[in-house]
Image 1: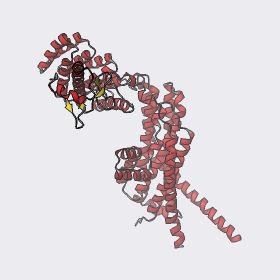
Image 2: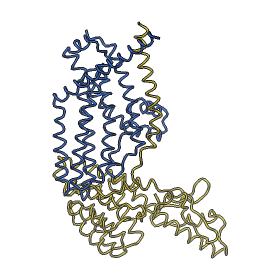
Image 3: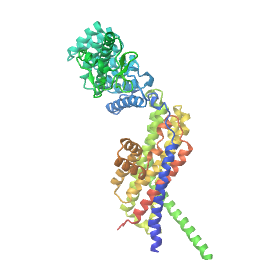
Image 4: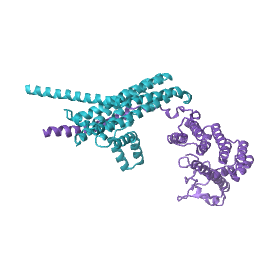
Length: 310
Length: 274
């Protein structure tokens, strides 16, 4: 009787539990295969809500929903870039079909018109996708926050990237009139008119952006400054190679032969050429320059450099 | 031979008797839920979905069907989970607290039959709930011209019901040895972990931590993986859960329910009501 009771109350449930776990463990893999994937264009589906009309229906959670849109925009861009193999041209991201980035940022700033990070991010990234949308979001930022000089700087930056120097100058000028704007704004207004697309101008813009508190802007500015430094270095190295060829009648076999000449050159921002332990000239991301004896010129090594990609 | 036949008849009668007992307890559990006005949540759901169908047109940038499916199926899941948790944890506890359990067990009713009956009674309540809510969602969809999504919606409703049966079993299991408040909290945690466990396992694997991978693998297989029943986004995007998935999910739910109910019966059988 006791044996029957034990069988019924302990052994039987234990057998059921063990068999159940065996079944669920093997079924789990089956279910993973049976569940269909979401459509490939799921991430690019049209936005569901017209957020501008949603204000007032958010139960006071405007800020939270704005944050959600902001994070979604970062994940949307990051996800597409992370999925891409090989080089990414940060000046032209149209191949990624980032059609929802503007709606996300627009929604975030509709819900939170003082969301500076969203305006900054839009100003930095959108020019590589849709310049007019970039201008639209920067102008929206200025309209919502006319006392913030940094938004004028963002708009000026977009115009400068588009080589619309007169509009850039005008925007920097307007920004310089805002209380608290640094002298840089006035200076840039003048510089845009005189030397528009010069490398010095670019350097000044990115140095100013480096002082931003926004990490995205800082990272972009740091990368751009490295890019400009690399362009300066390549120009100087190639000039030195030309001079070497003129004097010796041949191109050098190894770059180390022109190291002494390079040591005498003062680069535009006064930094020095850098040589690694293997005695190779390296770019600002520590990747050795690629030297082609046939063309007698150096260039960035696309396989190793962090410039101007990623 | 005759003795064997007698044995068979005895076992058959015992099984029939057990089924009758379970049926009576289940019927009463369902009646109790109706008396407790559990089904009033349907009014809230109908109001919510009607308001959504009528008002969302202007707010959804032409995506009414998409929003109504997401909103409706999410509401069915959330309403169902709350019913499973709050009714599930009090089903057994109420009988003990009101001492009615003594009169039940003074009759020839086993503790296992009692647990299974209570569980099935709540499952029927939830089934009626999801059925009515599914019908409300269908009408709302038809109102906004989303008739092509109806098939997918019903497949997703079925998956939600499977998930709710597991949540009910979890709630009853915790209530067999714990207080209602703690049982509700623990059941809700299982609901959350059950939906996160696959992502956490993936994260642990990506991080390369052996300890984390071991822990999350254990969590993944020991607790119900509720992401196996998640099909709301897919449905909103026009997909219909394939038959293979529905059958797999059904077997998975049945297997996990058997595990949980067996644990509950084991614990409840040892419980002293004095």
